[in-house]
Amino acid sequence: MSEIGRRRSLTRNDHIMARLARAPGLWIAAFAAAAALALILPLRLPLGPNAWDTVVYLDASWRIGFGQVPSIDFFAPVGPLGFYLTAGLDALFPNAQPMLLINWALLPVMLPVLALLAGHVARRSRQQALALALPFLLFAALPINLHSLYPAPGFDGYGFYNRHVALLLYLLIAALLFVRARGLRIALVAALMLALFLTKITGAVAGTVLVGYAALCGRMRLRDAAGAAAIVIAALGLLELATGLVSAYLVDILTLLGLNTGTLLPRFLTVASVKFNVIGPLLALLAALAFASWRDGLPRTLSGWRQLADGPAGWLAAGLVALAFFETQNTGSLEFVGLWPILLPVLSTWWVRKEDRLRPVILVLTLAVALPSAVICLERGMRALMSAPGYAALDVPDLGPLGRVSAKPDIASRAAGMLDHYAAYPESYRDLVRRDLLPSYILYSEIDYQATWLLEVQQAVTAIRGWEGANRRKLNGFFTLDFVDPLNFVLERTPTRAVPVGVDPGRSTPALEPDTLAQLAQTDAILAPKCPPTTAREAIRAHFAGALEGRERIALAPCWDMYLRK
Image 1 (cartoon, rainbow, N blue to C red):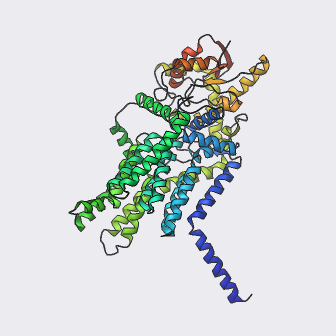
Image 2 (cartoon, one colour):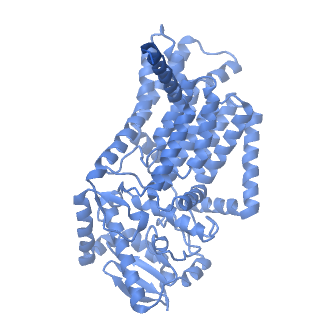
Image 3 (cartoon, rainbow, N blue to C red):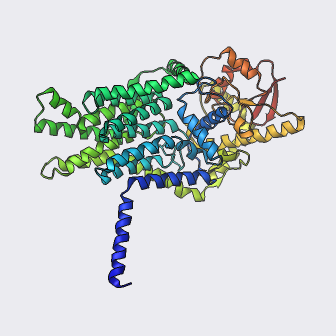
């Protein structure tokens, strides 16, 4: 081949590669393939704060496998969609690392929506489609929250449903702003609102605010918004007729509202303080945009005001209100990533206004709103990944995928030492319980405690197997007097019906029903962890005290008591 021919071939190849790199569908497909591969591989991830929250999903998934239905057969603090999708992915990828499995549980819903959205936008502008797709994929990639609770690197095994909702709201805002085809917009809004309702009710409330604002400012016809709402109601009606799940879910929500009291103002202030790196520049950007509108002349007609409300400033204000409301209910999330699709019109509008003196101010403030979330996500994710090779695996051989975590060698060593210490000196920690104090103010957020908890569960598994062998009796199931209950799925036993998944005293502990006590009476073993005694464990023990009556107490292991059904 001649030199000219080679150059032409290289040019064609470069052109093809450039076109592929600008194809949002290819990025989405590559992301899906990479996620599937990661779920197949037996990956070990660095342990992070509150990692035991993963067990809420694993426990619910195990119960679903036995035919139990969330909100009907067990009290759940959130909607059923994440639990069912986790169960489905777990069936496909039984060896998946749980933090990845749960983090990506809603991808089967979200990636098709993203593909439809990006494909529609790409017909007008591939750059705009990429600008919508790539940030979403970045934030969906790893189990990372945008606010750290502990300084050591690690992945966040908590806040899963908050991250799911934050990404669903991102897609909802993008659909409202960028989809022009009425039918597609109605379908996407209906699908996303249904997913929000079945994931977490506060997400659906935030979504309703956004859709209502779209109808108010003329972005979406009122008839179309009503049509989307009708589709959602019809789908929920069919689900209710088939299973009774919707009404049971609403009852759980009302129960949660009764258990969780408090005013919204302190929560808004907490959100503002935690995410001031986004809210501060956002308020400045809103002020600059408002000044630009005043300078250019305010509208004098209703249609003019609606057009102004449908502009970037109006949507930024609406997005701030809706997303801030959602985040007031959360600990651990992808806070305010839903603003990204709104920032795109700001950039595109002000990028071309080269003669406007406000242009550099608007562009800098737009970047100041957008960049902190991306930088934090990348920084925390890369810290965890780059630290992983130097971390040590925990000695939890019987916990299956749940135990495929690692920690700094000194933290792993400390966790083992603390387990022995808790068992040797329980009275010190009982004194703290009497004083209504935890051993540490942020005990559950400390990675060494989460590692100690996993070692405590391993001790229980070893002791149960030893007891069963010595007594020639296989226990039919377990209920653990703790926040989460991993023993049934680890030991593959029958889960108890009518008990909550995730027992958080004062937040997700409804009053005991006669059916709950009756179901617990059929469970062979109720286990009480003791390393260390904590205020929460004692509150849970007191809450379920009626279920312990008539049982034989056995000192199963240094850190465990077993209440055996006679």
